[in-house]
Length: 52
Image (tube, rainbow, N blue to C red; front, side, top):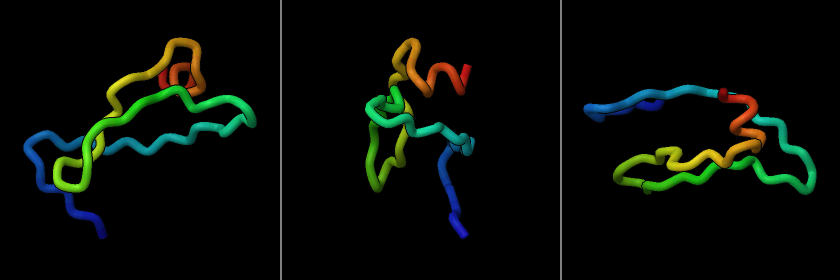
């Protein structure tokens, strides 16, 4: 079981199809002590199309 103990915690699980030769279209920042956050979503990318 994963326990998240932050003042701002939101977890959303999504499925992004991995199309050969095409990136998923998002960038992340963070690390082990701060957690990982999606920083950018490229317009027109798989992530943009699925999460819009």
